[in-house]
Length: 397
Image (cartoon, rainbow, N blue to C red; front, top):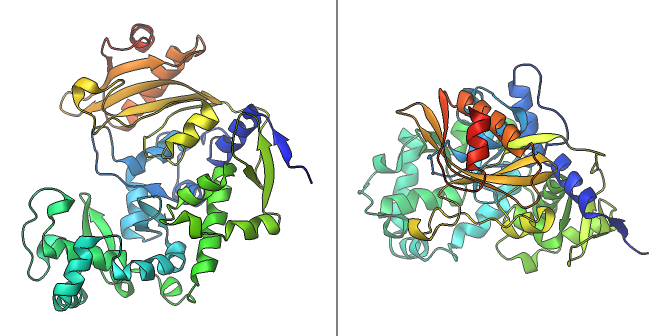
């Protein structure tokens, strides 16, 4: 049977609806119910340490729901334990009920095959790892700097002290969990923090867990290639993951030909394709809409590169650049910084995409004012860099 066909525009609208942009933002206050539903729609909120604007995990909810109290998300993650931190696409906040699904990944990481530093510690000082676990059981939650035998870490992750390697190995393998205080991890044993229903859940085999994670990814993506499906939860050896075929056989993944896509695609069987998407949103570089750059280019024709690690003189668009979504298209990009001392949202550069509509500057200005207010900033200042800067300056003023 010939696969269904989708136009490029239909695919874009399907992706946007699956990612939570298919309906207007709430007209009233954003509640825990909204945040819980959103995280389960997306499957995860990626974490990142960069704080030039705001921590990455806060932005996806703002993009889709508008202004909300960030402490609500903090409560869900760190107090109420409705969310857990573990490896999703990268380090991510996941719904707590995903813990059993991640046990296969924790077991797979026990040999530390992909982390030579942990493998060396496991071989040379296994008794120290056991001592750190005992210490966390007795005194946790603890920061890495507070565990038995802790030493100062010198530099980045490549020069971590044994104590930091030990707690991260225990975290990778699920022997401890973590929550954040000032974005620093605090480690505790699972039985001290996870709900009894989660701790007592039946073991999920590797194949069943992988199948369910692909299912979650398919629902969050709407329409996707095989590579898209397997990269969402960052399967380390995607060629070995065959469970996606089970979802094709069951009819949950429907083969489609998408206009302009060179690879075969699959539509989630419950995916909705709105006739129109009326979104206006700034997107974090670590948003699930953005973290696969090849997919972003394929779906939206938007070439995107995170330039944080590029020397300043070689950056094209800026340090922390957010795409701007208007309707069903990515129409601009802005390099943003929160100048907290001056209580000002700095637009360090602003660029329009080819074919951006005339209302781009006005719509972007409105979104920037909303973002600044949400961050507790009083002003928006547009610096004269980029082909959109002049029009945006007028629109902001």
